[in-house]
Amino acid sequence: MGQLAGKVAIVTGSTSGIGLGIAEALAEAGAKVMLNGLGDAAEIEKIRSDLAERSGVEVAYSDANLMDPDAVAAMVAEAEQKLGPVDILVNNAGIQFVSPVEEFPREKWDAIIALNLSAVFHGTKAVLPGMKARRWGRIVNIASAHGLVASPFKSAYVAAKHGVLGMTKVVALECGEYGVTANSICPGYVHTPLVEKQIDEQAKAHGIPREEVVKKIMLEPQPTKEFVGVDELGAFTVFLCTDQARSITGAALPADGGWTAR
Ligand code: NAD
Image 1 (spheres, protein in one colour):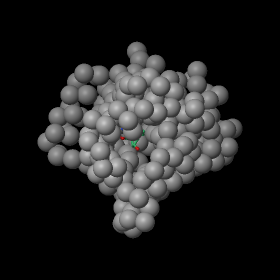
Image 2 (cartoon, protein in one colour):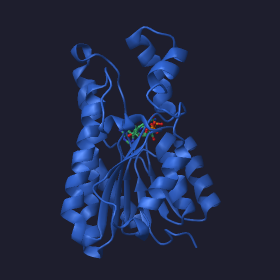
Image 3 (cartoon, helix red, strand yellow):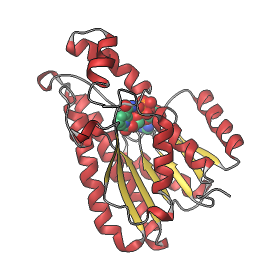
Image 4 (cartoon, rainbow, N blue to C red):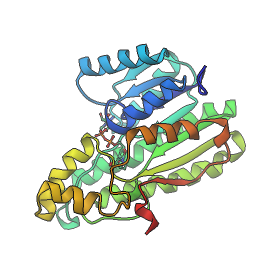
């Protein structure tokens, strides 16, 4: 029996990258998982059925577009109906756009705030009543080292991720007496499709080749000089969901290869 057997988890943005790694780790720890994210329906169904088979737990999928607050609430209702009351919410879905402030398109700002920050609020709001009533819950927000420090050309992302850290602290204060914890994990660079796309954008914004973006911009601030592994973030999330992590709440927890130690 896995240490999270019987729990129900939603992981937003889990059809790719970090979210998928976290969903895999939670399922392997025994939690039933609701996947969410955008993408090709057949590919997603394969991801869902492979994970269900491998882990032996129920795995469902919601195609909710989290830019829409009603869709966020509907996803939570669907998870409860298909899998049972939601014990764990991992707010992971996120997007990025890189550009100087004065050229930053307004619609990109709005989209990043809507997904990276507001969807965290809407999802948390939808799961908290049940978690508080059952006196157990875990909110894990995948923020970023950019929730703690800034980099140029990432105004919306840095603002949203700093916002996530603030929101997390408020939830921790409000829910401390209800057995519900809320934490932010702050990863450094992880080599996912999001970062792959960003290598090109950064190369354009800085006017340098791709290899230089990886070496001089992405890995330069990480003393380990290595990308953070998706497996590390999965294991970290599982730990935060155990009873042994019940006093860890309101925290911004770096997993950034030492980046924010400077
Ligand atoms: P990714 O692009 O690989 O995956 C993003 C996921 O979000 C996908 O499943 C995608 O379908 C989903 N998604 C996108 N728009 C959506 C929408 N409107 N509604 C629902 N789902 C949507 O990205 P990733 O690198 O795995 O990033 C995941 C999270 O980790 C993000 O919040 C990101 O900011 C954060 N993060 C990433 C890194 C990194 O280096 N990759 C570092 C720190 C933090």
